Structures are given as structure tokens and as C-alpha cells.
Length: 416
Image (tube, rainbow, N blue to C red; front, side, top):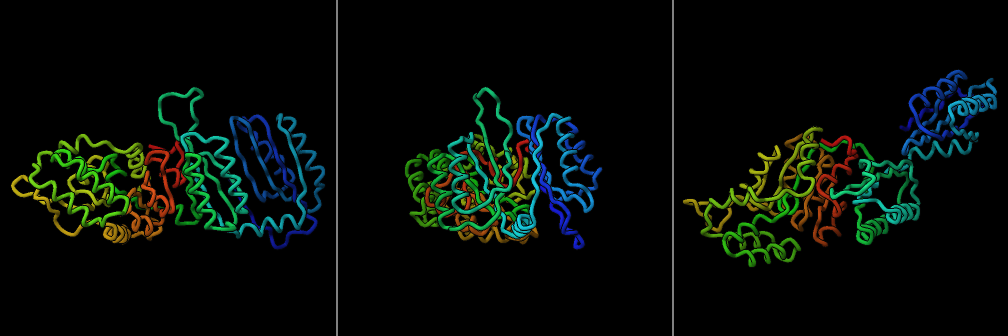
């Protein structure tokens, strides 16, 4: 907790500002006893911060001792109180210049850096904190969002997340972005950089790509396997996702090879499709917190509607396969949901839900997702192709879809 209080206009110059720092074994009631002693001297709490790490208490309290009260007597009393509680107490007087400089810093920009990894290593932590220091940024608070790992590792996939609350402006924004990308690649972690503003705390709508994002597979590749043209279609799909082929043309080429395929294969494919790691946890938790969700996909409506029923997704926009007499004709019906169309649909979604564009979250993996990611307040490249990772503002490549919750500040204990 961090509480700031303005100095009353009539504060006396000879009021004493003292910073108390208490450390020791944590147990219930310590803060209550310490604050009761401060109250007996009619002190004003200017700032307070408390953290507990493995039952170890770290409590800092900046107080104003009122005029006419012996500040040395207050310090002695607080040390005596701390001794009785088996705590260590350090006290430091804060000078006027030091205090004024502290007050001036409250107007500086704030940012959130989220570190995601299967397990945070000292090497990763050291590299990230050095990068922040090199950029002239001050770390105000470090918070662990992930749950406590078991003492003995088991077969379950682990998740680790540390959130840094930062103050100041980066010295070189371009160098910062390059450092985020290089550290992510070199140290097998993800780093998400966000401005800590009102929009960051009020995201309301989440739009997801379907194939290779919400689902592990590319559905059209599965359809092609049933039609006996798997290798041909997979090659076109991969080229399209790398941005090497115009999406509309690549889609027409691939769908044309499905001509004559029976529609009876659609439910069979739908039932064998596997969700991406963390997908159900992400959607369940988002709905619990009141978020609206949507699929914006260059895939097909049949499978989007299947997932809508399974995951209670609010909106689905995708391409419709033309089916006549129970057979796929090799054509799609209506306008193709391509990169530009996804971005337009995202804007329409914001209007329909009555939210600002900055309150939107978009998640995707392919080149056709980039315009959508760029327009969202938080655009996330998920296990994306290299061209997408380099262009997107944020990325998740080391964990499942539920890692997105950490970027929203959600802790493991909040998960559904």
C-alpha cells in the first residue's frame, strides 16, 4: 500500500519529518501496535509502505511529528516499542530539500514492466533491473503476481510473473524497445511495457484471433488433410502467416482446394481441435471480471461458433465457407476477414460495447493480425512469427494465453 498526503498549508517549518523502517518476523497485530504508538504522539502519516516476504516484515512509515513534540522522544519510544515486538527499527530525519525533491517526483510518468517466465532466474532479474537502471528509471514497487511454486518441482507447467512499478521517462525509447526484444530472445522470458494510466486499469473488451492463438492448430490445414491436400495448403498457410503472400489470395487458393469436401467432416474436426494452453482459464476469468470477448478470425464461422458455445464468447467474426448440397464449393461467402477487416471490426466492437479504443485488448499471432494489434490499447503478439514479434508492442511467447491476465495486473489468487 502507498498513501500520499499533501502537507497542510499552515504546516510549521519546525515540524519534524522522520522515516521509520521496521524489519523482523511478521505476525498479526504488529502494524496496529506501532501505529497506536505513533497516534499517541499525534503524528501525521505522510507515506507508508509494507511488504511481507516469507513471513519477513518490511514496513516503512514517513511521519510528521507536530510542533512542540520532542522528536527524539518519539524516536526513542518507537524503538522501545519495536524492541518489545522483537523488531528492528531504524529512524532517519528527512530534510526539507530531500522532502521537496520527493514531492516533485510524484508528477513524473509511471510505467509498468511485467516480467513473465516459467521460472524467474537471478540472471533474468539482474538483466532486467540493469536495463531499467541504464534507462534512468526508478523502481517504486516490485510485486509478485504469480502464486508460490511448490518446494519440489513436479510435472505441471509452472508460471512466474514479477511486476515492476516504475517512475520517470526512459532516456531512449528506441533503445528500450530493442532491449526488451533482445532480452526476451536471449533469456527466454517475456517483457511487457505499459504506461500506467487510467486506461491500463480499465480494459473492458478482449478480441482474439482463433487459429494458432485460441486454438493450437490452423483449422484450414486440418480441413486440407481431410481433403487429401494437406501439404499444399500448409505451405500456403505458412507463407501467408509470414506475410509473404496476400492474405485474400492465399485464402482463396487454399479454400479452392477443399472443393468437394463433405460438410460432415466439420464437426469431426471441431471435436478434435485442442485449445491453446491457458485458453479456458483466460476466458473464464475474463467473464468473471465482466470483460466482453470476441473472436476476430481469418478462419471459418463454423469453428468460431463452436468455440463460442464452448467458451461463452460474446462475438464471432470470421469467414463463411460456401456449402451446397452438403459439399464445400471451394468458395467463401461475403467479404473476407483479412488484416484490414479485422482492424475495422475491432473499431466496430468498441462502438458496439461503448468503450474507448484504448480499453480494447487484441491478441493474435500472424501478419494479418498486426493492424488489429496496433489499434488496440493493448495489442499482444502470442507465440507469434518473427515479423509479428518485431512489430507488435507486446508479446507472450514463453507461456500460455492465461499469461495475458498478468498484463492486466491479475494475481494467481484471483484466477477462476
